[in-house]
Image (cartoon, rainbow, N blue to C red; front, side, top):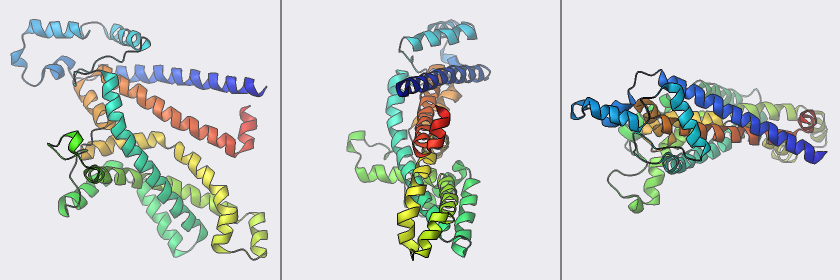
Length: 329
């Protein structure tokens, strides 16, 4: 019976993912088709006088742009089913290799930001919950509310202006020093170029974890078994260590896994602000350049990435709370 439940759960999630991928790809393709951007012009460049009308027709025919939109989507779907993501129009390279190369840069950025936001948010939530109603609690709550309403791109521009332009402590952008070969870039240079984008992304993600942890800790501290522990003389860090941390850490982790979608969306904006060479910058360039294969490839990849994060969060919730596990079958 247990094996049957696992198989049924896996099949449901697989069907949900496939349905989501089809729906997202159709929506993205439709929006790009309605765009006034001419893919042929983006492929050729700004100087259209170098190309005759016949050459334009040949280019459109080569990329399949002269066919109807429905046929274009179906042709793209056939290549996907064959395991081929196609070729990028603007980068003139294989979409799969382009995504793989840029995903490594984005993954490093998102993982650093994910760890920092989770750690800082959890710490702030614990401090706020342990000091409920105090001036420290009010400061942390106000700080979190401000962060929750602050757009990532605005925070990035602020850091860029103050820390990079005014003080000159960090580079203005890019993932490495300009004009330096990748093999010659030192670890210190990579960290300096990564710091501001990661700081921007992590600070915006602190609020949810901090506020959630605070509420959970307050609920735990008001429970009957904690009151009994206080009656036995337990106070402060001892009380937090024995009864608080193990009841709030796993819910905070599961919530943090569910923030993958928000993290990816923030990474797109942060990479644009700092010209960081990741998936976020590539998807913006693909949209502005009418690059259908690259855009849809990144959309599918990011959908799987976000779905995986939500799935891990769902599994953690089931592990943490037996009531959810029983309800899910």
